[in-house]
Image (cartoon, rainbow, N blue to C red; front, side, top):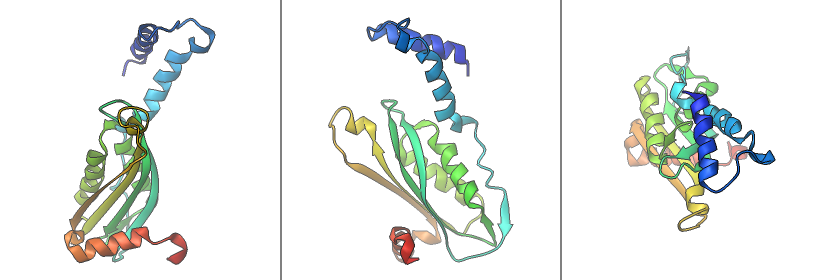
Amino acid sequence: MDWERVQKLVRELIIEIGEDPTREGLRETPRRIADMYSEIFGGYDSNSELSVQFSEDSDTVIAKGIQFYSMCEHHMLPFFGKVHIAYSPNGRVFGISKMVRLVEKYSKRLQIQERMTRSIANEMQAQGVRGVAVLVEAEHLCMKMRGVRNDARMATSVFRGIYESREEKEAVVAMIRRPAEDI
């Protein structure tokens, strides 16, 4: 990405909204925004490294409460929350850091929550697991700050493989919802 061009465009935007980009508080804003964009949109160049696995097996592995921050593609405002990933290994398990990196890979992009949820599930499924369930709960600033101005949260889910049956869906959701102290 051409970060100098991004800085120029941000400077132009500051002018267009009626501000003075030479004002003390705004002088470094174009650079700060370009730096921020390189971080929050880093998912386009990210590698989740799910190919790194360990020989082990389990019925179900769950990574609960993986925090994420993303940007809505409709208004370029943040949405953020938690991702829960459950999967049934097929003789090999992933380190939890790999699942965190997978969430970062897809959350650090312009997108919608539904696509992010599906993309995470698709990549997990592509690694040969017997099943995967991804649940995402998020708050959207595009709803809180503008338009309907409402605090509603959104939840999305994708169930693949063995988790597609009603019984398995209910069981994995119950495990995800169970408080950590009850495990």
